[in-house]
Length: 527
Image (cartoon, rainbow, N blue to C red; front, side, top):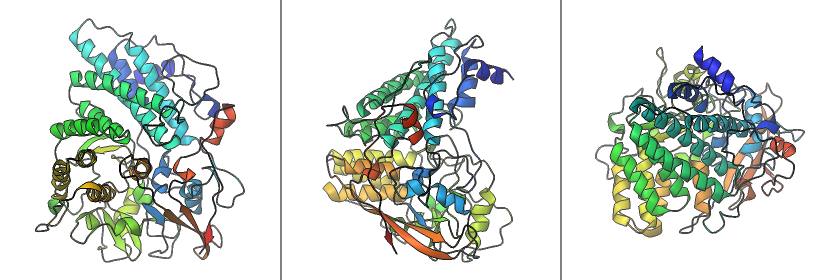
């Protein structure tokens, strides 16, 4: 009850359903903030991303659902184990993102638009909350050691979250960080104050966004180091801060700093999962995984990649990257014909009669059991120790430290290949970079990193790389039918304008003069 009163009192006037209010603040009456424990309750309730119910695309309450559909990890499924089809509304909902339209809300009949600003609104809602927490923390008493440490905890976590939310926003709606142009490239609007500002907002530069991110992380690192380790992966600590630091510096092409912070993560959390001994019903994305560092939000991929018409499958281009002696090929993915299903989560079915050679196995082992439940580990907001090794390997490789880069890469690979396999690599230069990039595809498949990797590779000052991506979109006789009538083939070309999302239409309407990202006309071929 105290939390409900606190939340109502501090944050009573937000209107997240209105696009004009994406940066407006809640009521500033903070009479109920008496201690750091009060702010801690607010962090738990509305600072971190909530868990949501796993379901299909049509109704899942995941405002960042589209992230996996932007890159080359998913394509539309063409088979069904029992002739059934998912709800048509699901694939239609994602159409504008999946086919890189000029407006993300474009429907597949080109007759109208879906709402575009759910992600934008949610991120700024949480930013509004942590802005208030950061401000309120300055008013807390510090007469005892407990009060001082408690203040460091809530302020440090709030700053970590603000950095993380702005990092996501600027990498969705701004250009990938390019050192030579970041000071003029447009990012997203920045607001850090707790006060209501009745004005039209404009976009800050990419550099300004990254400057804020780094500033917040620097404070968070100091404060959360002082506080100590968290008891749960669902709260940020100094290791999570160092992890985000390493990822941010990797995107900024500051290789020495990326390596430095990745090493800090490895020093504090070196554990890796040996896939050779991983239990049959366990996944790498699991609440019990020794690799977990931090997670918030949830996961609905088991209900999005199903062996049904109008569903999606892990693309052949990703699946074919795994060699037969790479355990991830069968531990991360389930295959039936041309369908490749997401298998990185625990298998929670307790009454499974099907075996993996049966076409209905995936539906009964993963899709059906995960439907309508709140999953505990995120498919997008998850930090795993495996990524820290990959960040350090990549950073060292760019600096020409081939021996160290190979060492980091092989440390991870020894946990991923069948016993007796020669898993070691010994490469240099661009060959080593290519191996590391492929390793990231294999290891981080459908963990929310691929789209951002593709963007940053394209602007990498050393070994730039941009690729074409092809997505297939099938039309059916009607919503209830599983009879296909046509297939439209969409291609995202190298350095395409589609590699940057448009600012949500609702935001542009309510903030007159806010500049959109360059758009063009998206065409298709009929297959």
